[in-house]
Length: 463
Picture: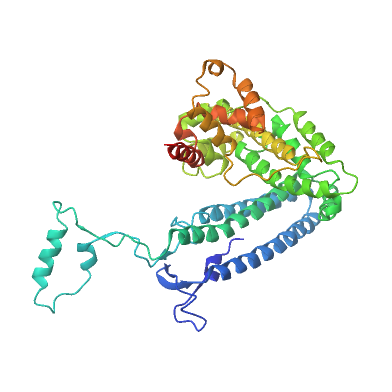
C-alpha cells in the first residue's frame, strides 16, 4: 500500500521497450527524464496492482487474527494499535498522492510542454551569443521588448502541446490508484478497530468465523451487514467517545457505498418483494435516534469561523485549515476542562448530527430510487440534459419563485413539499438545496459554482 507505483508507469528514454509512436509523453521526475507509459498500459497495470493489494488485504486480516490468537489479552490492544498507527501513516502518504500536481505527491511529474508562459529575456538568457557579432544588438532588442512600456513583452509560448482533455484524463487516471488504495487501507484500519472491540481471544475466534462466512454473497441477509453498521453509527451519540466526527463521516461514506452493493444483491434474491424490502429499510433508518432537523444551520457557525465550505469537509480535503485540528482530533486527548476541549466537542457533535441526517437522507433517496413505481408504467430514463435537484432549485430562485408573496414567508419544509410534487424529486433533498440558497458562496464549494454556471448559461440562451 505504501509503494511508489508511479515508477511502474514510466520508462527510461533509452530503454529497449520505448516505442516513440506510443511513448510521446516526456516528463521530468526526480531530476531525471522519463517517458510515461500509454494510458491503456497504466490502466491495466493499476487493475493488477489493485487486485494484488486486495489479495494482500485478505491475507493480512487473516494473519492479524492468527497473531492475535497467539497473544495474551493484555498484549492484544498494544499489538493492534501499533498496526493501526502504521496503516494510518501510509494513509497520510496516500492522501498527498491524490493531487498529482502537488509536489508532495509521489505522482507529481512535470511534463515537457510549452504550457508555461515565458518572457523573451528568460527564454533567450540561456542562449550563448558570444560567437555572434550581433550579441549586443540582440540583447538590446530583448530588453526593449521586455520593457514595462511594451504591451507585447511576452513570448507567445502559452499554448500546450497537449489538448486540455488530455491533461484532465491524465490527472484522473493517475489519481485513481492512490484514491483506491486509500479506501482499501481505510477498510483495513476499520477491520482492525472491529477486532479491538471484539477482544478477548475467545470472541476473536468467533469473529474470524463470521468474517470468513461474510465473504460469501449468500450471507448478505444475515446480521452484521453494512446496513446494520450504518444504522448503529447514526443511532449512537456516545460514538464520539471513541471516534471523531470525521472518522464517523468516513465510515458512513464507506458504508453507504457497500450498502448499495448489498441492496442490489438482496433485490435479486428469490421471494423478495422489492418495494416492501426497500420500505422496510427506509423505516429502519427513520426509527433511529438521529436528529432529523440537523440541517446546514447546525454547522454554518463553524463554516463562518474557519472560512470553509461543505464540499472540502465531505471530500475530506480540508488539510491545512485550522478546522482539521477541531474535527479530526479526539477531544478526550485534549486538556480537561479547557476551552479547546469544549470547542472541539461542540463542533464535533454539531458535525456528527449533520452527517447522520445528511447520509441518512442520501440512503433513503437511494432506496426510493430503486422502488418500482408501477409495473404498468414504462419508466423513462432521464435525459442527459435533465437538471439536478440543486440546479432546478437555483433556476427557480433565479426566476423569482422564492421571492413571490405566496412563497417568501413559508417554511422550507412546505416549499420543499410543493416543489417535490412539481419535480418528482426527493422532498428532503429539495429542502437541503433550498437551505443552500441562504449560504455564502465561500461556504458552498466548486460543485455549487458549476451548478450556478450551468443555470446561468441556460438563462443566457433564452436571450
